[in-house]
Image (cartoon, rainbow, N blue to C red; front, side, top):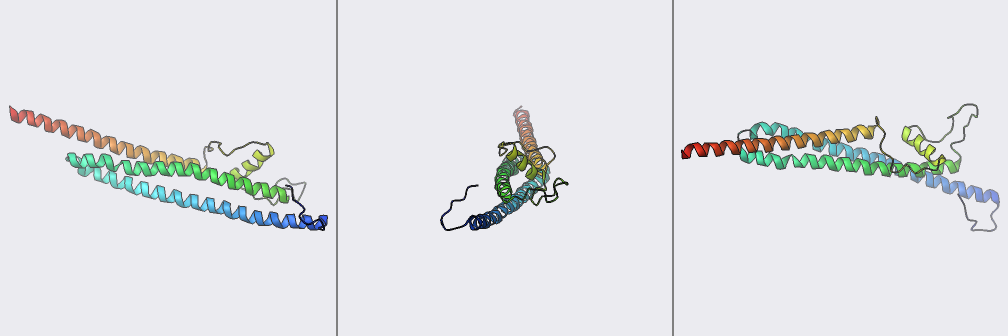
Length: 203
């Protein structure tokens, strides 16, 4: 990181001190940004999961009432679109928020490198640095920087929290699609039964 000497009278020591003070301010800002993205991502996930799950559960309960009603069956087809759409929004939001977290993590790690926080305090013991790299994602950012690789669009790793969250949204979408399909089939059966009844009456 280059640091322009605005005041030619500044000594190298003062310049280095100013640089470190600036980096520390930037570091505090990047930590706040990282925490913000993690917290808002978790809040959004809870909202979408709770809302979609509640709407889906209510729809499953209402299916029994629609067995003998064409109007209710038609309504349930439209109703199940709601939790399915909410789950899709949650799925997409999870993907986008993950990218934001990765970008914030990248900035944090870059500042930590500039501050020298990834130098082992005990040279004989690897990993004794003061940099914040406790999760696989944070460690992955450091590795990507070292290898000069952009991982912003990397797929989510299997077994991570984000991976299971996306699977949960997939499941909610599948349940909603199944509910809508069952309602549609029931509507067709009721329509056929009504048509057959009309034919019998005409005879």
